Amino acid sequence: MTLRRGVVVLTGAGVSADSGVATFRGPGGLWEGHRLEEVATPEAWARDPVLVWRFYQERRARLSTVQPNDAHRALVRLERRVRDADGLFTLVTQNVDDLHERAGSRELLHMHGELTRLRCERCDYGREDRASVDPDAFLPCPECGHERLRPDIVWFGEVPFHLPAIDRAMAACTHFLAIGTSGVVYPAAGLLMLAREAGARTWVNSLEAPDNLHPDDTFLPGRAADVVPGLVEELCADWGLG
Ligand code: OAD
Image (cartoon, rainbow, N blue to C red):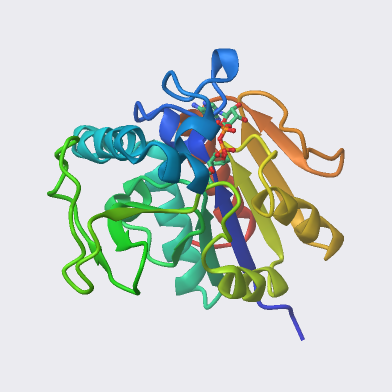
């Protein structure tokens, strides 16, 4: 009996860098001029909601100015071909932009949340919202009347989304690709080792070797938009997928 192919792809900020979206750990360790703790923690939101809201509203407004790149599109081709051949495919992204779905990815888990969504910090209310991008106006919750919705983003100290679904994908993983992630934020950074230890073949693309790289991983340095299309073609040829 042959093992059903289970492909898991983990992406990070580097996959969107070629679309013009800033990575988190750029030169100087700042994210768009802010320390992460200033804008990406529940404490920051409690301390200075005006600053945090403005920061995310600017990111939300900018989404409509960026487009998917060749790496996003190549991952769509990989998904289609693997699924057409009755394999399992899951794309786990740490990115909060919507470039994977706009490229056409379907089996997609946003483990750190989505800029395109807002939710109430008091009740269960949440909605997709791409239009309300005024940096100076909080939006009240239409459900419970609380004065402000928050970005539907997983901040430091909060539990990532979709962990049970990620566990299920990892349990069936035979081939694992990590693309454009520095390998320092857990639990995402632990998936590469989990895959390797479970016997999956592993590929890593990034500009420089990430913290969690192991000699058994196939490391492909370079820009994702240059590297990923070739990797996808090579894998599909190896696997006999048209
Ligand atoms: P980082 O900013 O930590 O790392 C980006 C990685 O992408 C680095 O390894 C770069 O070498 C690589 N890179 C940059 N440009 C690239 C390109 N054009 N092609 C390929 N690789 C490139 O981003 P993440 O690892 O995604 O979490 O960060 C993980 C998490 O930290 C984020 O999801 C966010 C942040 O705090 C939360 O907001 C909870």
